[in-house]
Length: 112
Image (tube, rainbow, N blue to C red; front, side, top):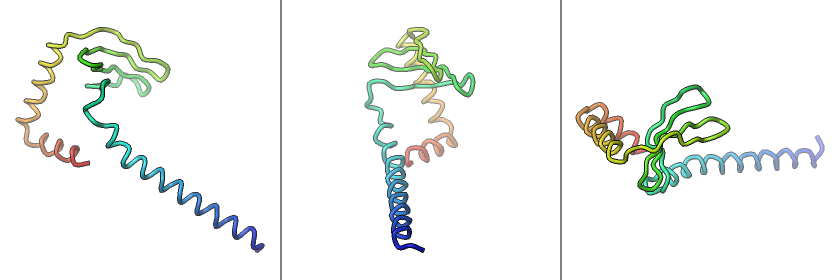
């Protein structure tokens, strides 16, 4: 084989290894940075309607909204009552704390 061809192949494989390594680092550690609860806009809960659309309860600042999310657009369908949503979230948290299996699952998710 030609020496230039061998050098080009080695250079290509090194570049591929670098790109794959960089993608791994971004996917592994970038997720933890953006998953914090200190963001201004958060998806509280979502329910899939089809494989390309879902309904979501979104918290923007102190306000809650019901949104329809598809591959092409996001629409706010309704403003939600803050007290009612927080009551539901507290009830959900209480049930989670009462269920020991759910606590194990939650601890596993928190450690990731």
